[in-house]
Image (cartoon, rainbow, N blue to C red; front, side, top):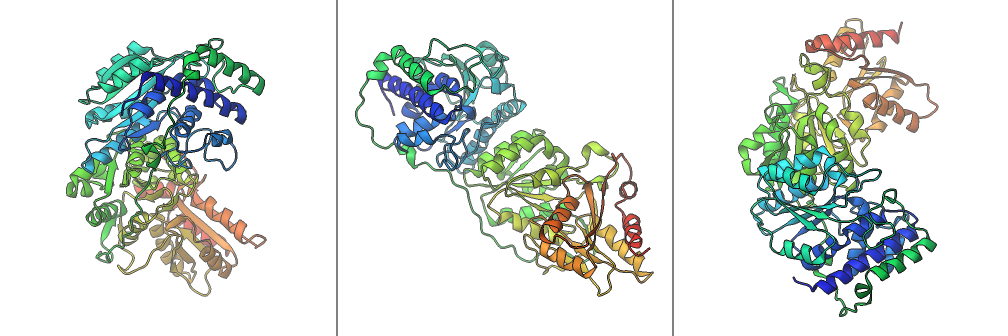
Length: 611
């Protein structure tokens, strides 16, 4: 595809005009950031992109310019731009997939490049060597560490069809940017990228460079632009970031724009037919698979993280679209089982969790089924990427191993104690916390079939006995009632490693003819709240929750809040055993005792109800 320079300059002018008018109508937005990028977008979309290619607007605050592009392509009526930032409009302040031509939400800076790496890894796996991905970034954005994680991985994996374009206008929100064009060039080249400096507000220079790129390495284009370009009265001046013009001021700005580009404003192109790019709508793969019955031996000692590895490798045999990203701990997460069986579908993200989640997100937009695994503690580093994936409604499958104080001697830096809280905050996320190999196997099956959002599996370091029969059924939003008698003193809700502490406490209490209902709440989100309330009702609403997690945001808070919401006014008696003290190194049983979440602590809690 090749377009005349005059035509492209006219398109750039129209992008600027529409960005000003739409942000003025909205009363908010970032018009000056749109003005600097208009020429780049014109050349990319009207002279470079093919329907096979992908484009990611990592500097999401320039969304009005991107929406203007799609209106000019004929994908939407120009009048719809005037709904920018309005309730129920797909034209949100920063891009989300509610706008159908956008695959991932952006605007939390530093993430687009990771997504691009994941998209092109997916293309390579599918044998598509022609697909390219263009990522438009802001220069302030490059201060984010996740950007450099992506740059490093792109070079390592030789993602040569990746083009990062930095809109280097030199101005951030409140100050000048960290680096200049020469510094960017040196940095990218030091990572093994091709890097080019170009005048980013020159249609001619941009067009010439993009037409002659050597795709023998990932490429960075440092496009030197002027913030607010086209409005001499404000361009390259501070304190205009994120400020829309009021309607009176906008009239003057549009007149100034026309005076700056009189030829481009008056140019009359031939009538534009709807672009082929309008047919490119993002989609995910909705896998539908039923696992065969597992074959674990009752009472065998198997860590849930190892059972995850077994189930993952089995899932890999069922679908060629299943891929795995790991943060250099696959021998601990047991994702190594998948890596050994399907090495071409296993991607090492090294110790760069933010980039791991970003790459997995990108691969999901291309129809792959990504699983990402690392220690649960280190997923906190990637919370922003997870948050943006949730906004994008990406069906990520995430696994956090080494949860809780029960990991023992490694100490608190390695203990996942915040992970349930983290994933509970994510829209449409589900959380599964199995206690044995059978339940883990079935939870992986649940994850494979969950397409609405993120699914999180919490696994344990320690070996635990196989407790369930192989034909036991597990489903999302359900639980297993392990113990229940007519005269139970209380209902105990727990999951994972503390199931076995609860069983020890149960045996101790039986010596005194005391019993309690024991619920394995393997589905933490959504909760099986009806079953929990029904069980608690039989024990006069005496409910004890035990968990190897901090008190804030964990299973206990979820259960107590749900009980009060769904059964208000009942005589609830809650007792919550959780990690309340800063843990330390020690043996697992010592730490469970130190935090009062072991069998003895539960024994004491139940005894207190009848004292």
